[in-house]
Amino acid sequence: MKTIPIIVDCDPGIDDTIALLTAFVSPELDILGITPVCGNQPLGRTVLNALQVCELGGRPDIPVYPGCFRPMLREPIHGQFHGKTGLGNTTLPDPVKTAEEMSAVDFLIEALSLASAKGEPVTLCCLGPMTNLAVALRIKPQIADGIGRVVMMGGAYREPGNRTMTSEFNVLADPHAAHVVFSSGIPIVALALDATHQVMLKPEHVTAFSRVGGRISHALGELMAFWDRNDVARYGSRGGPLHDPLVIAYILAPHLFGTTRARIFVEYESELCMGQTIADWYGKSGLEPNAEIVTRVDAQGVIDFFLDRLSRYAEKVPA
Ligand code: BDR
Ligand code: CA
Image (cartoon, rainbow, N blue to C red; front, top):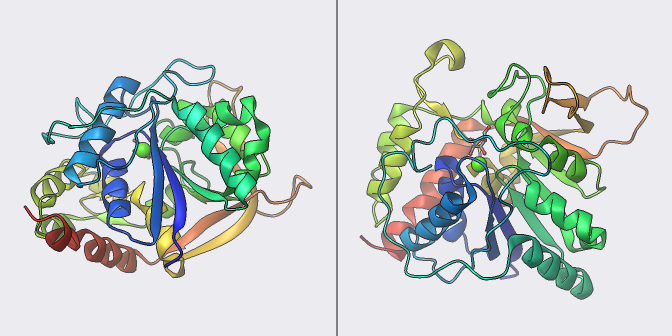
């Protein structure tokens, strides 16, 4: 089978963890590396969490490259719904392996330069603030030729923000990095709150996921239960939006999603609207679209997709 080479740039994070666990049991994907960044937690913790998730998922073979300690210009901010460690109340196994010596930025430059030379572009899965990719692009812009596309979770277009009135966490955490990526000319698929708020992880789903079997079953149930925001007024039901895993679902099951092409802009000067993402739906800017923005999601199809994938642990990595 011809596999899709991917790099997972992330800040685990409960939903990052579910995305990683799904990717680990997807034979269509060749995961070249994981590049944690400062985001939901400080860098030391997102690196440790990534190593622990590799251990839990039985994939210590995947290298983890530590990324940037801080956003490009702004002070770091961290996630509010992932608990003290970033992984809720779950205790994951201690990792046997350690992080690589090479930094995420050096790894991106090396892997993407090679991909460009071989003519085998890599898909970048961005699940956190995009600092690592932006810094790599600033150092060596030619690496853009080694990227087939960036499939990213972040932003909010027709939805309001989730961290401020206007802004989604990943873009707010490093708006300058998002600006660099959105203006790079690299093909982008944007899974913003407009998409992720269509897939609510409700209590009945949590129960179903905690029964998938295998060694992840218990931890998965705990992680997903912690994720229940219980904000009925806002979401119309109990549960929480399943943000980052949608990136993996989009790559593997694109028929579950509908997109609209538009130009994306990022606000990085106004304090009131810092990190706001704006879509030029109707060509007002006179600029060409730079992204496919996901506007429709088959929510039940996506939940079934994850149940199917995560059930594979029962055979592959038994308890
Ligand atoms: C994004 O923010 C983080 O807290 C989540 O991991 C996700 O990547 C959602 O706004
Ligand atoms: Ca994330």
